[in-house]
Amino acid sequence: MNRLGHICLIAALSTGLCASCLFAQSSEVKGSTNADSTAQSPAVNAEEEDTVQSSRVDGGQEQQFVAALNGSGLILMEDTLSRRLFLGASFSGGWDSNPENAGHGAASGMYTLSPYLGIRAKTPRTQYLLQYQPTITGYSSDVYARQTMNTASAFVVRDMSDRWKWDLKATGSYGQDSTRFLAPQQTVVVGEVPGTGPNAASYLPNAGTVTYIDGTLALHFRRSERDAFALSASNSFNRNTGFNEESSVASTRLSSDRGLSPTLGLTAYGQASHYYGSLNCESFGGGIGVRWQARERTFFSLSGGPQLNTSICGKQQGFSYSAAFSTRLSRKSQMYMLSDYQPMTSYLGPGLWQRSASGGYQWQATTMGTLSVDLAYVSSNTLAAVSSYHGTYFDCVYSVHLRHGVTVLYSYRGAVSSAGGTSVSRNVAQFSLVWSSNVGQLFQ
View 1 (spheres, rainbow, N blue to C red):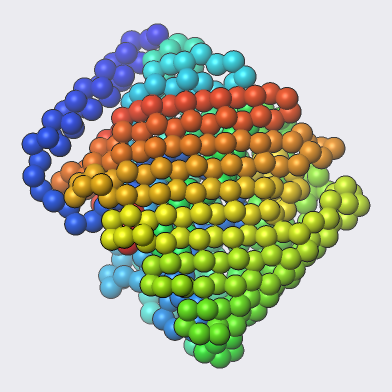
View 2 (cartoon, rainbow, N blue to C red):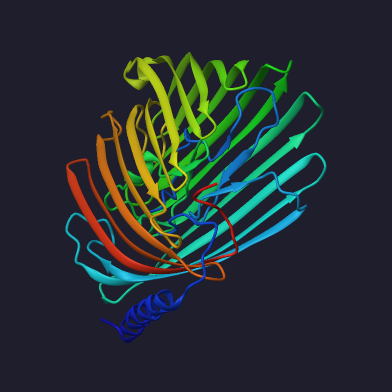
């Protein structure tokens, strides 16, 4: 155990005691709350999950929500200010049972430092949101070296006319794969509720350094107040040095949306994908879907259809689907659920089909305290090029919101996974001190 590790661990515990004392003395009531920003981050993101979502299903004025990269919740793009700067930082200390996601790892004390920078800007026809966050991790044990994970995202939307617009969504990450478990969570947008995606459980053993890039360019045409079309092209790239393999997917999608009412809409879509890298084959499919705003704060969507794959893919034909649900149970509590069975995954390696599910509950227990619980599961099929995978993830976080954008978090998270006959389990208990300049919101 080196001297720097001792110093950082002692500093983390001391900060925790000071923050607890500050909470005991604080009497200021905050009206807004921030989300858990120390839960595990799927920095290697699932490309099928939107990080941008609108709250209306018809042709009316839409509110666009974008996931805050530091896990603090959702950012509302409709802002009266033409330019807004987001700043933040978090410092954590605690205990990690398996820092390198190894089959047999030794426990160690740990600490993380994670600064955050974002900027949102707009002109009369264009909106931008750029975000960047690194996570730097150190350990009190000499067995483990310092690790870093860098994550960045961009969202741009341009209104070319009253009927035409295009948007660009991109995200990328680079660093030690095991650091993803400690990095701030990249939130998934489920209606108006921030959630944890099922890929929170996607932790490969001994994956080494990961490089992940995913981007989507989409063109939208609104034919009438109720009818709209969209054509998109996307590409994702994933490389893990631990396996010396690369997996990529290039996809196109054409969809048609029909608003039956201000709260109910139908979708028909067709899509085609090309896998390249360690796996080379094609996949084609289509289907229909429904989006329903059951009430002001209840959102539901379901879509699915047949998916046909070429013989090189192993003739794994199937029926794909994707479902999402979120609701505000009361003024101080909300929940979400996600489930899908989809092809086109690359972050787990060159697999073809993935089953996943996740859900969570968020409760504003006091005027200053919020409790969050999340559970996620993901699995993939066995192919000739890659073994099957399955993993489960759980977290429980209690956050205390102090003055001046400061939040104290006490969290536990655990994951169990298996890939290629190697099983990995990991548990982390930590205290975190977070500051953010009102970046995102847990309860919108």
